[in-house]
Image (tube, rainbow, N blue to C red; front, side, top):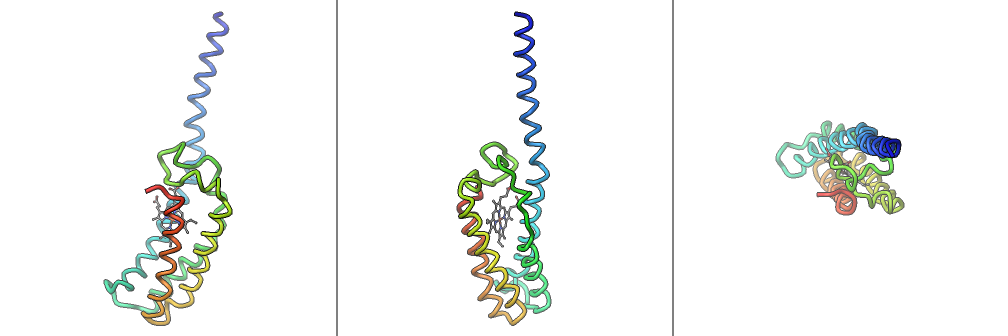
Length: 152
Ligand code: HEC
């Protein structure tokens, strides 16, 4: 009986010990992918300010910001999205579990985003109207993924 209680206590300790360990294991990945999106957001914001007329259009700056996003869009970030690192288990992430359930759709949305970003990188330096024309579709592609897969 004493032995059984010991085992029960031991497994309870193990169970509580393994939960934070799992969160710990995803901490770096979640931080890295959120940081990745923050850098994208920064550069997208530089372009957005020009599009909205809050900053004067500058071809060099626009090209730099658009190329930064384009280069980031080419990273293979697969390692940053381990299964289970979603907001049903953790409060440190806004990633919905649907990402892992509808992976083909996520890939398609990501591919659409990459295409729109590539066009933006080609057009951002060609004048304000070219920037405006190619900026909108990128914003839509961010939103279409967030609407489905990122919690508010
Ligand atoms: C294919 C899907 C997808 C696309 C495309 C996408 N995002 Fe996200 N984004 C996400 C997911 C999922 C998260 C939640 C990440 C997390 O909290 O772990 C996120 C989080 C973010 C965050 C919050 C980061 C933080 O600090 O928590 C920002 C800002 C962001 N995205 C900006 C953008 C912008 C700007 C674009 C377009 C230029 C974009 N995203 C395109 C899926 C996407």
